[in-house]
Every structure is written in structure tokens, then in C-alpha cells.
Length: 281
Image (cartoon, rainbow, N blue to C red; front, side, top):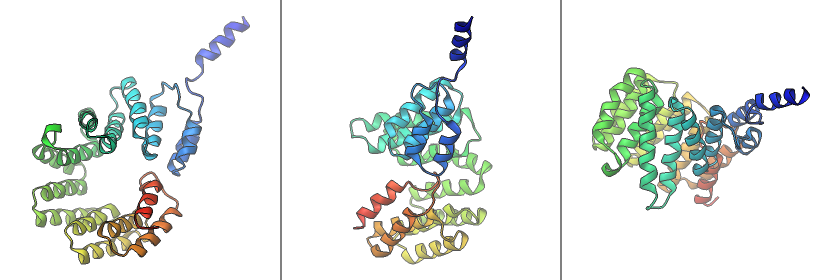
């Protein structure tokens, strides 16, 4: 009966042989290549493994591979809002980085995935916020709609007041109601005084308007909230490079950024390297 025991052991074994927990920890430390090797997701039917693989590929900028892993996972677990959220994100980036011939198809699939995520979990603020962003950015023939974004804003605000203000600010800016947009961004920062992203959003808004003094003031306030924040260093450098000013300081900020411990919530190092090269570094 030995062969029966051995066969049962093989059948009972997991369908993947990687180190999921080790891969997850490497992912959190942004050691993405090492995380991918540890995960060893090839052939996996485990949706959590496929989700993590998709997230790793996404952070590596390999959006084709990311969407393939997440598409497979969403088919295995069609009731997961998180899977459809990440699928939408990966398809959105494929649309942004594809040719004019293939981008529309990916954009439509992105919208459908995000709409599915919201339908599956009406309390998923990230999914609703990403969907609102899509509606505001996409042209109407790809499903973009200012009106649909406006319907989402109060739903988001009911769950996360600061994020609701942020979404409303984007709507106002789209309508060219810049005073309204500024007011909503300031309220978002007041509602979430420890969330540095709110002050970065305000600084970027002023930068887009060419109001550099106010942009710098928002950055100063952000530095007081979270001194030495990697996300703040990156945002400041990116704004300087876009404005073609303070390039020496921008290069110094990016070099410092590249030496810092990061998390998946921070912009990837590859983006910092791209900006550094753009700034002549």
C-alpha cells in the first residue's frame, strides 16, 4: 500500500511549491525580484499566490504579466473585489503604456474590472476612488463620464470623508472650478492631518496652476507632518523636474530616495531612476 500513501501525499500537496510568507515579506520590503523567485507562482491555482504575483509584476512595471496573473485569479475567485481592483489597475497601466491600437481595449477592460470591484464591494474606497479617476480621465467613447464620477463622490465621502473631498477636488478641477478644487483639497488635509498624501495633492495642484510659492508652502507643511518621508522626497523631485527648476536639488532628493527603505506604497525605485536620468543625473 506504499504507492497509495505516496500518491495521496502528492495529491494532497499544494499546487505551488513557493514560500508565500517569505515572498510576502520580501514584497513589503520592495525586494520584488527576490519576492517573485520565492513565490514561484508558475502553475499555481491559489488565488492569493496569483494576487501577490500580480502585485509584484505590477510593481516591476511588467503590466502584461501582472494582468495575466490577476485575470487567472479573478476567474478562479470571481467574487473577490480585491482581485478585480488590482486587475483594473494593471489593465489601466497596460492601456497607458500600449500602442494607440491596443490601448482602448485595455482601457475598456480596466473600467469593467473596476466597476466589477465596486459592484462586489460597495465599501471598497480604493476601488471607488480608482473608478472615479478613470471616469474623470478617460474620454467618453471609452466610458469616461464626469456625471458618473460625481455620483461616486458622495458614496466615497460617506466611507472616507477626506478621500471624498479629494475626489470632489478632482471633479472641480475637471470643471475648471479651481477655487472649489483648492477648497476641497484643503478640507481633505484638515480632515486627515496625518495623511501626507493630502498635502502632496495640494502641492501638486498648485504646481499645475503655476502657483509655485503656494506649492512650496504645502510641501513645507507636509515635511512638518512627516519629516523625511520617501513619498514626499519623490513628489518634490518630480515636481521640480516637471517645472524644469531646482534640478540639482531634484537630483539630490532622488539619490537620497534611492538609498531609503521603501514600501509598496512608495513610488518604485525604477521610477526614481527614470526621473534621475531625465534630470541629467
